[in-house]
Length: 492
Image 1 (cartoon, one colour):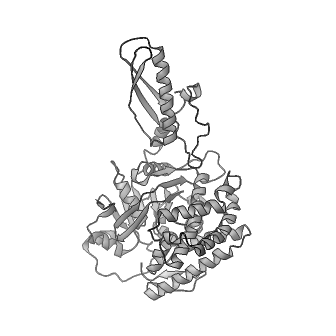
Image 2: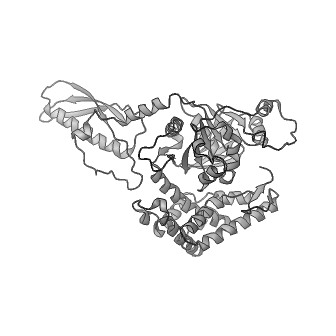
Image 3: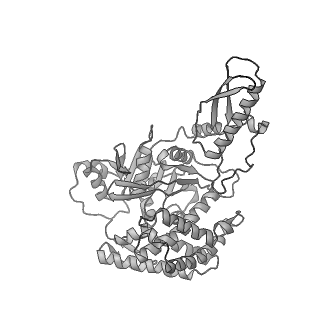
């Protein structure tokens, strides 16, 4: 980030009076601490120039300074303290500034097609699509719908994506839709009822256009099936951004969809903390503002300077320049800690609210529930601190200790006290839950490092039992015998 500074100096006796007019040309999003340090550095420079000036007339001085763009997501402190100076290292304009690096990345993405496809038009997918469509120069956006009923609902309600924020309704029509059907060779013949004329073009033929930028926001258990619908349109130069709950999804995708590493697209991961829910199809409510954390996964984690696909850089740049999303990019190791932290919180709030049948805030100030939370966190904390990918990372014993994780759970429960967890919503609707990718993931990783998470294992299967019973009672789910005893949706 570069700041263009224009200074007006009015010398008076006995010391000059500084009237500062700062014109900021911010090419990147400003972050608080570096900007404050830059401001102190600017005043230091003004003092030196004003002292050296002996003229009694107005003086105008213009120059550029560079503001380092750094991340202080963990401790909130800079690596070099709060000292402000004008050393050559601090003020050397010959060094590549973040603005120069940004323009270099922008030049690399200049030839990348701008269209962004979003697979999964639920609350999160719709929120991302609506936010991207609100940019001054929005990229073309296409929602990939997996069933004909959703496509019909889109046209029936006028082809609009609606988002309500604090009672203000904002509708977006600059969004395209496609029916993401399975490959013809793998799709079973189905009886097709008479469709509206508007659907004829969408269902007539299978799309073969290459997808360069894809955002996946379907439920974790539907990821493999959803990606199989568009796998023939993805290339190694494509990028896939996964914004979903839970962990372990990438491993399933590699095994079932992209087994050959040479043909895999570039993967990206996202964690979103915005509170969004759907009142009816394509009508969303933004109930709570949050942030979005993003990371590009290197193809080989051993590379010191990994090379990323231009499509991944374009997708990251587009997401971070969207104000509503409040998106920030992180290094893979930093992002992994954020992801695991959210997983630990979800592994407590989601299953407990689903079993008790309460709102998130109802978990607070109840001694019996507090004891259960501590017992579950004892297993979760031990598993996380034993993960091999976190060995050598500073402060993991403190960050993922029982007391701090309990404080995180209490803090999230307080902030979302009036919300229903996603697991409770799924069970109340007779739908599948993502418990296999939340609590189930922790149980599996515990077994890999020799830790038996007995309590979490019990909690996982209690949720699966309730999921089965509610699904059968409401007639939405059909029990089938499979290797993992999952339920298959009778109709989506």
